[in-house]
Structure formats: structure tokens, C-alpha cells
Image (cartoon, helix red, strand yellow):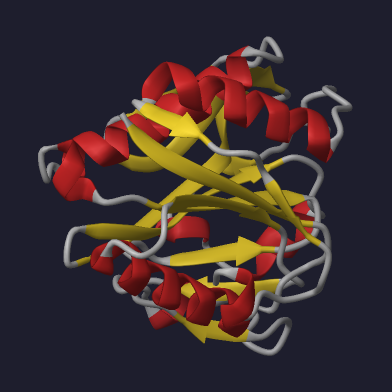
Length: 234
């Protein structure tokens, strides 16, 4: 069993600061000088472009800042009301199996949602976690995306991670084709009628983690500032 640190940032973290902090932590995990980390945070409104992003899927390029990122996937929105979880794990301790790791992330999200009686699931050919909205007006079997997944691995240490929609402004997703998938919507806890708070979601994420990943948590650390520096453990 490995030791895992949880960190919660109370204020939105600028995306470049988050990437720099993750990269520092990845190197420290690889060197064995820092513990593995799950970092829970929010970002200011922005779009990220994964390694498979297509220019035509950025519908409103001047709406929010756009950041190229080394994670897999296409365009994704991040903003207030969305719980981003950046996961930095040594996958060598987990059979060096990236596909299994991604399935574990999916299962983590599914079990988190289940704690609020939301039935999330995988869909063949579509990345992320989806919910069935049933028949909506003239649209039968409407399926909306509630969580995105985008990971990167360097020297078998993971970073980036997942984004779970708690109470974001869903109109902000209209500036992109989310993850390159058309014909489906985006939803959130609040959009589904579950008026949960971010701390409640964080507790559910931690509880579900212990049922999926074989890790022993250390006490969570709350980051009171708008960004994380190297002295804070990055």
C-alpha cells in the first residue's frame, strides 16, 4: 500500500501555475522525494486543447483563454463550479498499465456519482462519464456528459486527470465542441437537480477513491492561496 496526499485549493488556480506545479510534483514522485498526490481545485474560465484537438472544434476562440496542453483528448472547458482533480500516481506501482488506470479513474467517478443517486456510466467510443436524461422533448434517449477525463504520463508518473461538473455555467461549454463529440449535451449535479456543495463532492471523491485505488491517505492539506508554489509541495 502506498501513501497518498490530498490537497484542496480554496481559490481558483491559474492554469499555467497548475501545470507547472504538476510537473514539479511528477519529477519529485519519480525521484521518490514526494508522495503521490490528488489535487482538488477549480480554474478560472478557460479552454484547454489536448493533443488531438481540432481547430474547427474551437467555436469561439476569443471567449476565454485557450491553453495547449500535453494531456490526451481534444477541447475541454474548465471553470468555477467544476471540480478538477489532478492525479499524480506512480503507475510502475500499478503494473504500468495505462488503460487499467484510465478505467480506474472512470470507476472512481461512477462511484462518486452513485453516492448522490446519479447513475453515471461509460459509453463505447465516447470518452468521459455520461448520464441518461431519458426523453427530452422530441429528443429520445438524451445522454449528457457530466465528467471529462484527460491524462498524461511521464516516466510512468501520471498527471492531469478528471473534471466533474458540480455547478459550472453550462453555457460556457458552447464555445467548443467538448472533447470533439457532437450530438450530445453537457450536464452537472445542479442541472440534474442535485444541489450539492463542493465540500460534499470532495468527501464523496475521497470515499470512492478508497474503494478503487489501493492507497493510504495522509491528512488533506488546504491551500489557502490562488496558486501553488514549489515551497508548498507543488
